[in-house]
Length: 222
Length: 193
Image 1 (tube, rainbow over the protein chains, first blue to last red):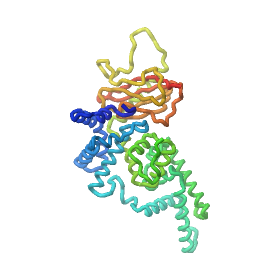
Image 2 (image 1 turned 120 degrees about the vertical axis):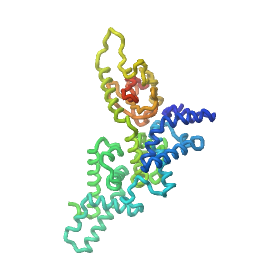
Image 3 (image 1 turned 135 degrees about the vertical axis):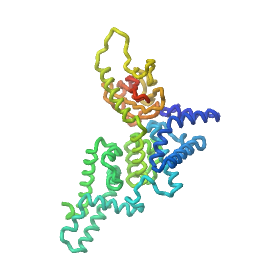
Image 4 (image 1 turned 135 degrees about the horizontal axis):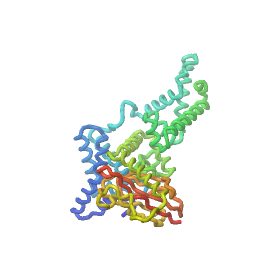
């Protein structure tokens, strides 16, 4: 048995005769049905819709002599139950897309645009609000200069965001684009507490301000 | 070592599961987070999976309460001097009127010495469909690693460092359907030098 492979999975994958396959499959389902139902229900809809997704998960896992389950690698990097949640979720999402198109029922589609350029613009707008760049217009400049300054700040901020370290860029996305709560961001980034998130956000925003100053957007930063 | 997906490639099932379990190396994690920072779909997937794992079916919160109780028992066992005479009292047989343990540690054997790369924790329970919490602690009882699982075997992630030659304690907690706390009790294992 491969270290880290649950017994019930190992027996299923080792079964040869049709009878033992059925028995080991039943044992596998009994062990993990609650988890798979939990995933299927998370996509919303009524009981029938959830059971439809749950059935789809079972069918896809059993297909081609449990090909998908055989792809689990017991290398100690994750538990099988965690891997199963990921796989079941993907199967449910594929099922939903197959039936209803490419939308993800768990996303608020009105909140974030699909187009990448528009999404980038929205993120810059949100972060600029956090940096209080709206005050650019308060300095009494002529409209043309104000427009130019605003545009410069926008492009400088966009450039600065793209230069952040991956973890910091992810932090900004989770906070301003996905609008996750601070405690959830802490869990996602494996930070010890929400205070670590606040501290890191403060550091990132300070770095963005410095980048804007270097780009000559000095008047906006007070 | 396996290469993690580059920033522009969507991560595999294994990679996301490893990320959620804290099983990626620093470099792998950085690569995956670079992708997540640029891919809203994958980001949503990871966030959703993490929420699902946290909100797993009932019994989880009670498991956490049971683990605190087990930790308190562990502290008593470690700190209280052994007393005799009288028949030995096993504090870990609670909840079973027939005295048979409902949760039993299988391996590594208590007091054994094991190589780090072959260290694997296994236990048995009756009933089997429970949520377990494995805790690995130093010899003074400080937890160095915990993991909740429905499985009955766990392998530590390669990224977790254990000192060669040192002794560690491990135990598994669970809550049976009747609401009684179960635990294997602490077992010790020494990491081979």
